[in-house]
Image (cartoon, rainbow over all chains, first blue to last red; front, side, top):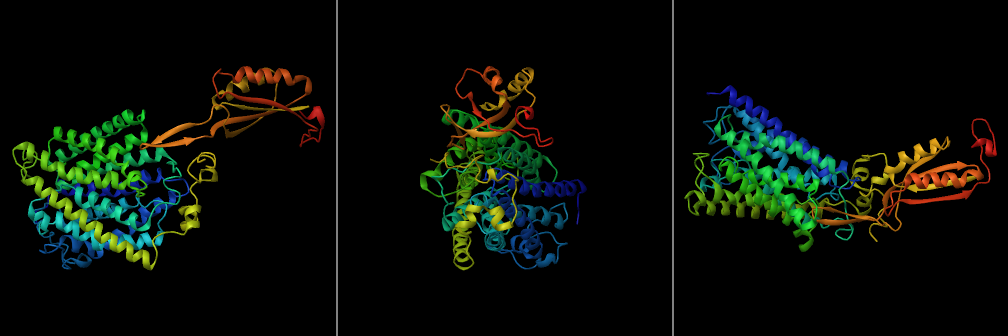
Length: 424
Length: 112
């Protein structure tokens, strides 16, 4: 096989960058929960790194990328058997198949990890660990196959997803909604206010995510070339635009531009540009980012309206942002950026591409929601997904891990002092 | 002998400390406190959700003084801690029955 050392070096580095996104996500989420649950949040994210790392190599990679099946891969590369062969449909890659496998592994880690933001403060650690393992096999593997593998039915249809707007974000967002509908609200929500206990952590996590996302998006070119450069610049531009749009929305609606809003806006932009980054122009990415900033900022209000406790707005940011990004490809995609892509509505491509994007979004969201809902119901009825009321009051750190993050117990309820007064 | 307790704005602590030192006060105890008076709390907004924080951070400063010094020390604290705006805090004095210096066992005014 004809390997290119530049491409190979870049994708190895990009894979490491994508891995770093999961600790970044852990801090992004961890700062937003109350101080008694921060270790629980970090632990759920880190254990996902363990579970998926082992399962992916063992067999899930083969299920997602090997074979000619329309719906799911095969067992040909189980246990990394035949790993000297490129994944089906990726024969022209100039990187070793094992590098491709490692790069895709990092996507498979962060996708279930995204769900932990919605279910924050109330999942049993062991139940989450088991859930993430099964979810990887029954939801992530088929969806990744449909969209990313050239054998998959959505890929064949002509739906475009450069780096995982549907596979990663809409998928995780829909799954998050399903799980929280099964497990219910946090004790006291929405009457009791649950203030983020460490906003600087949120910003730290955002920085790590933003950095790692260059590996996620520009690495998805699977080469070091002009397409990866477009993906890189589009990612950064959309993120900047979304950050500005979110704090502008806040300034107009609430009177202040907040740091949490800046971080949230950046993540919304990163999410929305993910599927589009290799297909649109940098000017198009500004429009996508700006739309994501405004729409996701408004979407975080939906949970109080409809009464579902999406604790850290995974639905508002990842589901809505992922759908938005996937659909904007239908408007802004241009073959000037990527000749392997297609032209969207604004580039004389008509509505054909938009149609394909809509089918992909609907299929992924519907399958992910239904399959996850069934899985969560089964686990909840058997082992139980949710901690006891007492454990929830004590906090996940102490009840699940016999640890506490901070010496001062006054941080335990997330406000600096007992909340009796604050919640009167 | 009196114990003077002052609740002041945290950022005024350095001014008060300097003023008390200049007035010849050699010791004090400072702790972080929280509470509210007429100032009440404030609101914070996270992703559009409003949070009312009633208890605001304050500094609690305690000084032991001999009875004749009470008025002047209170005056010094009030002058140094004042910003003129709501939430500046309060100062009060309470009678103290006895004081013992742990190291030497001295009692009363000698222990101040």
